[in-house]
Length: 352
Image 1 (cartoon, rainbow, N blue to C red):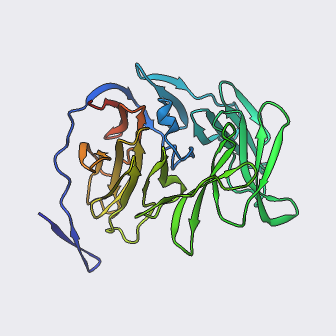
Image 2 (image 1 turned 120 degrees about the vertical axis):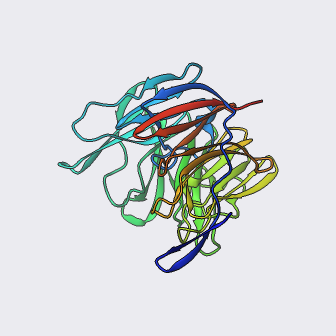
């Protein structure tokens, strides 16, 4: 039964709560007093399922981070340098991670990379011409970032710097607002997020290290994503709305995986906290929260089957739990269970 709410003199028709929880998936293990770190939105990560393919998820407790792998819910603390200034992870991939620390006294940023060992490196200049923090290459041996070319602030280039020697190269970019998401030195490719204001499309663009385009852009259709809400799944994609106008506009999740297309909408009054996809693209995990800001709805986490869009598992959580999600390989689904002030990371086995 639908309900009608009147807020600030405006009448809203609200859809009923989701159906009863579907909770027949086996719990493989739990990690108490931790939560999944939102590496896609809260930090940065490659625009694909490489972290899930590696069977790795990032967990956090306050400012402390750990990696979760299977079997046995194996935890390994993320190495951090000992410095006075606060340290934050800026990029996470299967090949390692990038940490940054800004010193308010000197106005300078220090950078470290963790790829088996922890080492400092010379990163982008601390200037308004830099476009975001550095990212780590797929093999963990190079760092890269976008900056203005010296002496020409309107010209942008990608700088790719080796972590093992003094090799460095730079590639001119066409006039654009592309965001650098990934560098693969083995394939000699760079992946960017592109939003075309005129044509109103979003997608992923791949360039070679010579600046030439590789193939056609991978375009997301039916949604309005940002670089953190578009995931490449093989030759397909999954994308979702980053924002929507109005608290009661449903958010949309669209996908094109293995030749199958789908579209799913949240219930009115709910926004998307997180989306995760397993490596082969058969399942899509979704976390929803209340977008009305007046505590009308509880949070919900659920998993869709990509072949037909049907919900195959769901769990209702307290309001504003904002659970993050992950897959470990193709057969394990991970989410943050919230009860009061306590959070627990749960790993579930997806039935065959």
